[in-house]
Image (cartoon, rainbow, N blue to C red; front, side, top):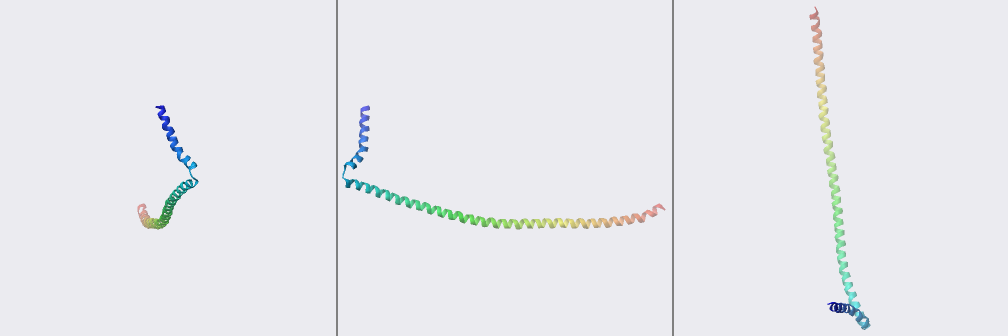
Length: 134
């Protein structure tokens, strides 16, 4: 079995070596033809690769443009929302301050009314006092 394996390995090695040996041994013209064909395949592969790369670069450019547009529209939307939020917050503040100011006016009016009632009661006590002491 080991002999068979060695012969298979040496055949495999010979098969691998054979094209290299033939190129070295063969005509110089034949060698150039093989090299040119291989070069043409590489160039064709390179052209396909360049086309693929160009398509990817185009996708990157389109994607970048879309992201930029989204950023701009997002900024605009956030600015509008920010302005609207600010306006509403100012309006809420103004309404709350007005409510408190109304409460203050009501308290002052109540206080003035209480003071007036206290004055009337004080005068009534004053008038009623002398009659009790007599």
